[in-house]
Image 1 (spheres, helix red, strand yellow):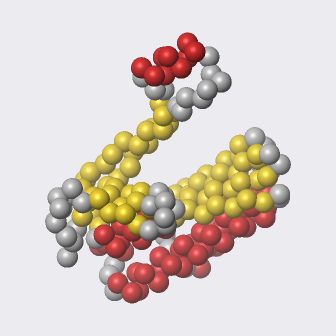
Image 2 (cartoon, one colour; image 1 turned 30 degrees about the horizontal axis):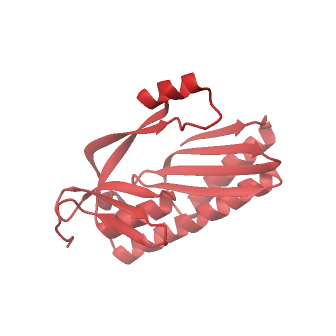
Length: 198
């Protein structure tokens, strides 16, 4: 498994890199899960350490955990605790559904490009903001696979990845759908086809 450990606004030592790498490997081994890759980002901001750990499983799902603390190791530990809770929940849901994970979240040959756009700030120079109004600068671009899932599985995948929304191909009728987390904490579901899932 490919494990990347990145530091932002700090120089990571070999001891911290080895610590977080071992924690990821032990966590996946504990739950008998196979990952394709993992990325751990540790950044220092305003005297706090923020750790984000993202693990991509062979089933196609992504899990994410976040931690904030005054110390780098404590921040990483909190991130791994959140990740472990999500992994435990994922394993429990797989048992409840009595299905093979690879069956339930197969990519359907569709993918979408995910862009992060530059957000205009009031204090920026007028010349720069005028150019950004015409064509916003793309900060990041990634490819995202679109999986065929039931609505409940899409909600689970969104929850496990700690994302605000998820686009998926509805296994009930084959159309693209979106599930998202509403401001009131409930889950929203957009189904342009207007049919209900089986």
